[in-house]
Image 1 (cartoon, rainbow, N blue to C red):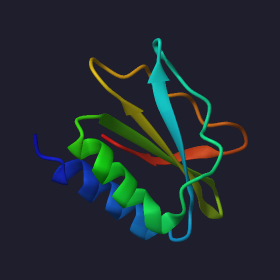
Image 2 (image 1 turned 30 degrees about the vertical axis):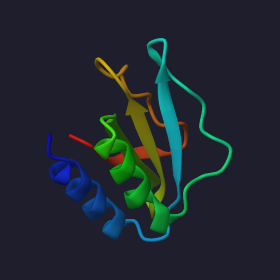
Image 3 (image 1 turned 90 degrees about the vertical axis):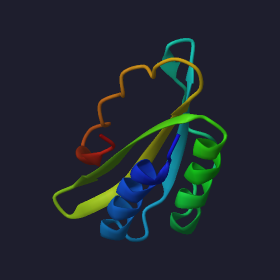
Length: 100
């Protein structure tokens, strides 16, 4: 399995969203967990995602923001099977970009 396409798309989004932090969500029983306690800092996001992809996890992400620009990134990880549907952005944020 090659992880480069997934990482390259994430890196591209992060270049457009300088300084955003990411929340991490895990698939559990067909649903997404609440975000972990501490968000990942911008510099940590790619390394965190790469490690989990190398360990065989699936990943999806959503870049959220408003008309002023990107505000946050949500990372979604799962293992075995398919991911649950991704949640809608919380109001008043909107979806600016997401993994394919």
